Image 1: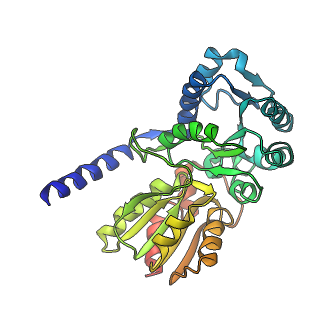
Image 2: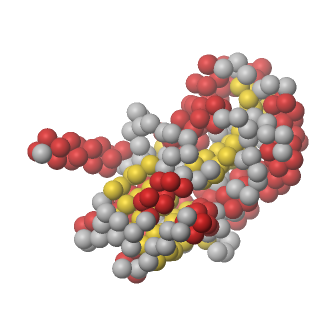
Length: 328
């Protein structure tokens, strides 16, 4: 028993140490893409004038003949990416979330998703990570938009470790993938040896089921911190990292939420994204928690750093703690 307690304590210490590290998911993506290209000759990259933003310098240096720059022309880039995929390439199209998920939506839908081609859309500035650039560069509606498209897979890594792993995961999947990435450095949630499984949520905290917090992206770290703070207050909660938003891990979700006091979703975007997906799944599977609350946005964003914006919209650990307490 003492050995088990010590093991749990060391695991908790490692998690705390990890979350003190700050690395951008785009950095993880860039490293993952270089690694993947070394294993697969069919991997190419198209860019809408964003390769530096996506840490692709090493990829461009090592594989210049597999990199195609289109400038600020997302629609043309996505159309060409679909054509390359139709000829057998696995194409990673990199650009900014608000422009890919809205300006390029028709091309994603018609040229990539409809024929189920291997176009992997790597979308930076997703959610509130466009921070100080303001509303025009904040892709807060992307999950709600993209998840409606048939054949699309939607991945949302919580940190740089997950982002690196999801590059290979996306490449191994047949069909289009939307990979949601941020801009600035965010807390590292996972250890380097973390095992990620497609379509399977991860239990980040398992203290109890007075509340279940379902989070994605940068909100996973905030939810984990909130769970630790709630534990100190005597409120035992579980945190799920729902990194695969489409298809949703309904089995884990329903099993975890059955009999829970409250279910709260947390995302750095409109509540019609992860929040609505979870609500739909629970209702369809006759899981009815006592309370259900979606934390996210119902308005446009504003300018500020990511930590400031998460706090402003009640999506940081403080806001999550207050929301859980309000439902007790």
